[in-house]
Image (tube, rainbow, N blue to C red):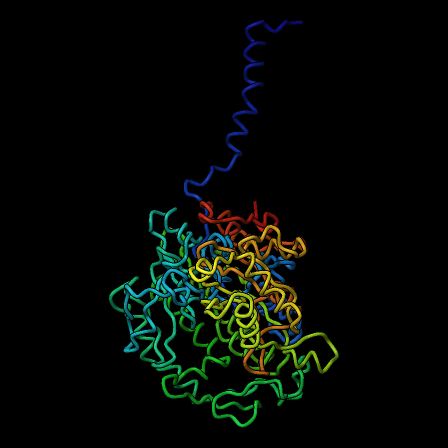
Length: 555
């Protein structure tokens, strides 16, 4: 028997040890040389879309629209706003900044500027001019009042501004605030002329593709068609019968019933048109025109389209959530989504883009509808509240203009006058609270300058804290009862409260990098921007307070 030499054994052992390493190296797939990202992100905000609309009309939705997002994507089913005053500008800002009004500065659609002595609109900017319309006021807009960056800004920074970011909406604030400070462009609708416009903040003249769309005169075409129901009226089984006393009426209409004429008024030729599903059609068309015109999703870096559908909010304010009009609107909006997603499939290739969908706030049902069914709800008068507060202050401290402004259920006190009278905010608060608390619909009155000691439950205190910006918020906050809001008219609905019907909104994700599934874990609107940031491997916005929804992302 021959023995193997020591040298041979050593050679065999060395080969045995090294072989798995060599084999392992050949079997390991090479890592991609470029960071993987979707070609395009499309952020969708549906104005005034309550969470329950996903399921209220589910059986009537077609395949390929909302059902596609819900069944093939990820559904955060317990998604809420994390601050109290739920309105359009604040909502869009929170979605795209991952922040809250106390930090990002967008405390409402408007607020009172005590130093300037005037009301400020969220996107006001008198240093810029209108581009694309003879209407001089419609374009004096920019994101300068937004105090933090957006996820769209961060994408621009991360790619050294090679990525394009575009905002499209009927409402100026719904286009400008999501698109961010460093946007490639933002476009909104001028209901006076029927054109999409922008401002010199972004550019000196409209791109050719915007002019081309404006030249189609789609608003006039759609307005002339009127608003006809998609289904026979008796098939709108998720709504109350047509012609309710609590429904508002479009201009020149005798009754709030189908079919609706979309007749404009002087100075607002296309206002009625935007209070119909045709507004969604036009928004979708403009979104597709933006993708084609800017060649979004075709470059080496991820592009971002922020599109907001404003018409559902206008329909809700006019007719209410339980109306046939709102049901018809969502059935048609679902079809618009299906067309948009089919276009994206053909444009970038299915699986190469990411979509998220949410809302800027929800809405209360029309109080009169609740009252019909013995539910607790009602309307309060903002004028009566103001008069009661003024009367109480005058009686306590003598005649004077103690209240400088009222916005967002907040009273802005006249600080110079209080100082002259040697009255503290705390003293004025006690007087006003005593006067307003007995009034129907008032749940409480808070001293926002001492919010930490507010006589309110912990949950709501945090939500109101999240709203308070030292330079922009008022001094006193009226907290309304659940089911109540202040209104001039007795028809339609409103929002702007910390209650579930206003805070609970959809958060759906679909496409590149997204898992199929759902969660009932409570998430907040602040989680949307960091989730998209994590997906794109970029820094979250500067004012971000949210966290990525980890279970939604493919790791």
